[in-house]
Length: 147
Image (cartoon, rainbow, N blue to C red; front, side, top):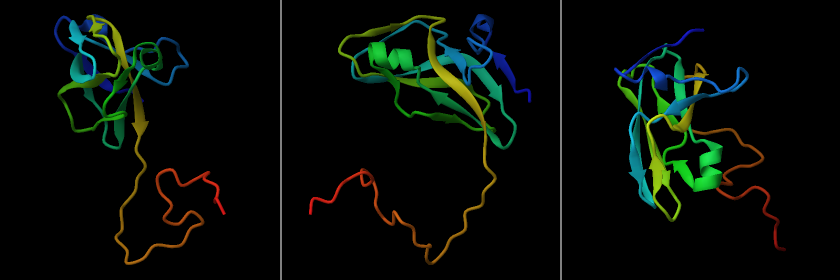
């Protein structure tokens, strides 16, 4: 499948690309220089515009090396680019570190995975079937009963 995209003027060198043929994700690059202050989020523009077919999304995910080495993460990870969106793809980057983090034009700041959406239809119901887990929520799996 081919996905159409275009780059902002003077941003052709920033086109998304995979570092290796068998990579799952395309690298996204910053189109501007900025300083990301500690404990703040900033929208980083990429210069990328997508034309996704209906039934697909682009998932914007963090880069593990930035997270491990610099505490840089994505606030809304994974971010979703919907098929109908035609604006510039931006990445909401968060600096969880203690020092400012410089972002330079061309830096790889996120990854993009193109994913096919499952065809589902939500159906409202009065009751739901029972399951082994039941209503156990956050942190409920793997906890031993203290009795």
